[in-house]
Amino acid sequence: ARFGGDEFLIMLSDIKSNQAVVALAQKIMEIFDEPFTLYGQEFTIKGSAGVAIFPIDGVDVATLIKNAEIAMYKAKSNGKNQFVICTPHMKAEVQKNMRLANHLHKVLERNELFLHYQPQIDLRTNQIIGVEALLRWQHPDLGLIPPMVFIPLAEKNGLINSIGDWVLRTACEQNQKWQSRGYPPIRMAVNLSVIQFNDPRITDKIKQICTETGMDPSLLELEITESIAITEPRHTIIRLNDLKNLGASIAIDDFGTEYSSLNRLKSLPVDRIKIDMQFVQSIEESEKDRAITEVIITLAKSLGLQVLAEGVETVTQLEFLVERECNDAQGYYYYKPMSPEGIEEIFEKCLQGIKHGPEDI
Figure 1: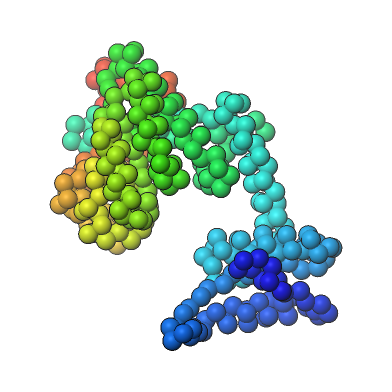
Figure 2: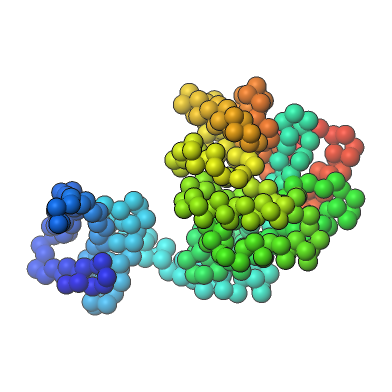
């Protein structure tokens, strides 16, 4: 039976074993392997299936359907074109995410969010030239919730814009506090999600936040992912130019994890490329990752862009980057993300002429 717009429901009875269900699901998936022709055009479609089995996954129709949907969405998130059998872990994960999503609606008024900052180091001068603002959530019962868990929930539940606004404002306010205490002005890097970036009000919001906090827009760096940068290039270029006209700089975060054509990259009004840490941290073991890292640095410099390497953890990685004239670096070799007070302690060490390095971690 057709269950939704592109969803279909198959109910089976008198099944003698779970293997029979698996065999049928596999057979359904194989149907999608064959292209079909419509009005002289050949098409290929992919499908995802979720399987729930009585009585393990429910003793009534509604529960079985709900758990089959859970498994189906898991199949989609795994890359589609496959089937997944519902498990107790999946059901528990969904219930946990539902609780987190409900709690997220109150997270700002309960003051459960906070920012940590990770310094960025100029590899020529060995000086701190910026920090990246990193969002954290201290749940009252579950403790520290990783961003990779709650950010997708915030996006899915329409909360990312309000949370993103809070991050921007808090980061700008913090930068101003440091300057008011006599510390030198530094770049403040803030991540924008795809939903924030596509918000038609984003430029006006950032302008207003900078005005109200006294933040110099030239000290604000807005980070977008590579996937944002290569999607809808005309829209992206217009939006980036609007943001740059405010005075902010633009960085492409996690560069190298998506496919970017050189033609698209050269047309984007960006200032900096951040090499994804998966390449940097594999420099010592993988010839391919060494080659990719070197190519990214060379490519960026040929386009007149600055390069920052993320996730630097060892002296070998650092030496490799310095030899290839990478501009900046951040990572545990220098500093972990830390509180505003921790950053102030580093500023004090800088004023005393203490060098940055693993001894400061």
